[in-house]
Length: 213
Image 1 (tube, rainbow, N blue to C red):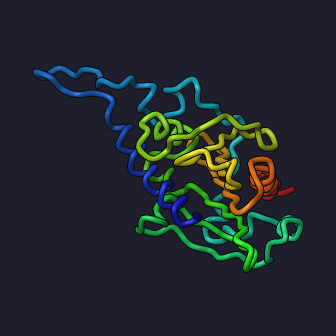
Image 2 (image 1 turned 45 degrees about the vertical axis):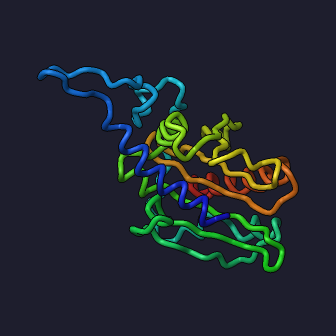
């Protein structure tokens, strides 16, 4: 599941970045709007009033090479996760383009959580919640997106290729700058409340870490 989610994130990088360049076409030497509305295709937060703004951006640069440090050990322990996570840096493969990740799994139970820092999406011009909204409207990879309660004051959405919350898998994207999100995935839980409860708990701990709390 984690690999499929990372694949979706990587495709979002490509799709959203492509959409941001599809604003106009040229006909007879005159620039004309594309057939899709600019608000639906643009990855710029200012172009879409539906995309929540981030009023107090957070700096996540120190965690690009140490993404596992975003989640405190006491939070991992409360979820029954091992202290040590598996770090994967941003790369050029299908599963690493969106940014660095860290995953934790409970051995033998199929339960795990993953945190992805969307620096790759940001660098490709498709970062932030705007990138998720744009990809959702394109319906190429993201076919489910729903407003989520703010996470410690930061705007968030539940999203994925499908709504898998009833099946015990929950993904949440949290905007920490207008061009940057981090995503948390929880899998192997019992239904929506259980899986999203775990995802939100981890997301809240990430915000606290970034604030230096």
